[in-house]
Image (cartoon, rainbow, N blue to C red; front, side, top):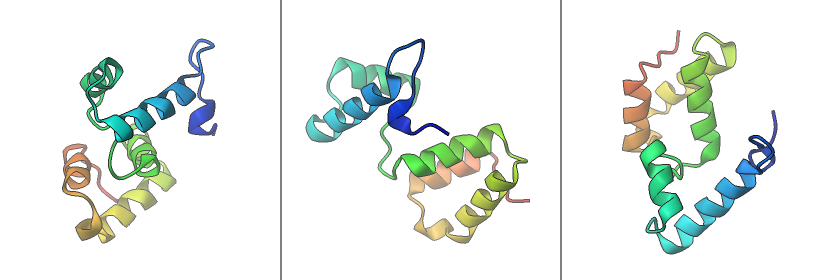
Length: 99
């Protein structure tokens, strides 16, 4: 899998652009136009819990029967109290169940 910064979309360095937007949002807040647009698309584009969790979450949503997704879901359930309340909400509303 490509690193986040290497992600391209139709020749555009989307990954690098998103990293810059996250840096800018963390430094200045979410008051600039790109941040508002990204939040409208995905409120968790710059989540406080990091992109590794976010990528695993999206993988589990799109491939719930994949062994890695199941292991990840089990790990989230075991560490439930350590999750941010919004992570718990995302996990629950996505109906992710560790089988």
